[in-house]
Length: 237
Ligand code: ADP
Image (cartoon, rainbow, N blue to C red):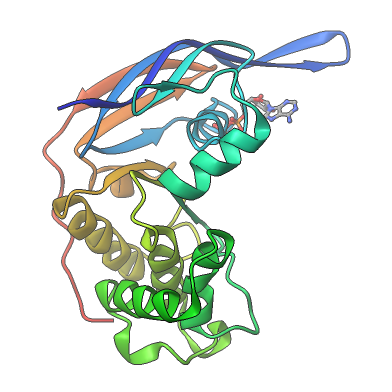
């Protein structure tokens, strides 16, 4: 498989007064297209910083970052924004949905930014909601949906532009165990359909659903192994 993500000596340093914080301190990683990777590590180990650079929300202080073969370590902010909207979908712990907009409109948002006409937006948003099992809830607003359903809407929004990469930052952190497992079943189904997923979590039970585990500590990768993923049970939402 081709490398979707490649980093070499990736560093992100922050100056904090007289001190230098090495949030990332020489990370060499290669992640193939079609992977399902979980990144773990204690708080402050550099997981979010890594996710932000991979997601083109931040740039490294030093080192290389290639996404689909393109070197982005020195890319302009505008170019990173274009790459983000074209290639990357994000899922967050707290869903980040627009409260006054219904599910369909929430899923349409990335296509509004991409300048697609309304008819195509509606069609694709409906299809994405069907993929996540919410075809029957398109007209519902976030406060009319359960936490698990809101996260499904957020996942539909993240995949609607057909991204190369799905990035998830603690996507089950606000959900109970059962609902968290349902969301992991959805990620596993998307992975089987070909989506590349990089997920940050501090819960070993959640990381167990991925096929590869990367562990960060003090801005470095201290463990990197493939694993037999635990199979999440799918339930109709
Ligand atoms: P994690 O996601 O594993 O909790 P982070 O990537 O958020 O870790 O942070 C790694 C280190 O970098 C921490 O010591 C954190 O305090 C520091 N850090 C993160 N962002 C900034 C920032 N904007 N300014 C200064 N230090 C930061």
